[in-house]
Image (cartoon, rainbow, N blue to C red; front, top):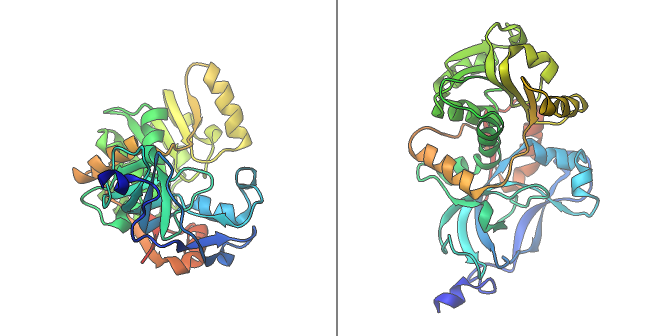
Length: 331
């Protein structure tokens, strides 16, 4: 009986149809629609999750706009959503680390994503148990932004205690996690944000702040071991003078200049330019869950929307004015 419960074909009370957000054509993110589709079934190494909340990320509205067509193609309808939190309702035959009913969260990986839905299939390797200190909305805000911040600072920047770290866009989805993760590594954090968010980033652990509405952060005289441009608003050439002799500049978006600088600095000693592409890692999500459960990490929620209002959520994200994360709730 236990083996039967583990099979992918036995989904218990899971309905055969579900609601999901679909993109019928490229264009205005406000044109996405909520439709009924077939509920997916997990493969041998996959888990079916009942989605309780789904994080909204800039990549979602960029998919809608057709900006990532090289990756998503033209096979419509497309599905949206990389972040989710929920509970396990069905298991593939080879899944060993999770059980029915487990509270979990994940980054589904790109492309294409499918967490804007009532159910989603997740690779076991991308899944982790949610932090016990977070509800589903808070947990759903972590995966993409939290993994981007962690893998940028730890893997690309080689962050360690005593490092001086400058975080540009410190009040955004990625930036709020980057401030906290850098502090968890005992780094000295300078956060670049606007006047209205200075108190927020200080509360998250920033040891120093720069109000970009009052001061050009690239004119700062401090030398940093890591400059993390979490909103891709600057460039390596503009920030190079801020870097220590072996410092690293990290951006979240590619550009022609950045790719050239990456190639050049990869073969030269000294300052380096890097581009982060976050990996969907269950192990890293478990690491972030441990930080949260130890009081070192929390999710800053800008606002939530029901799944039926995904179009509004996408437009809010596209505005660039969100502080922290936007999350969809799935009833």
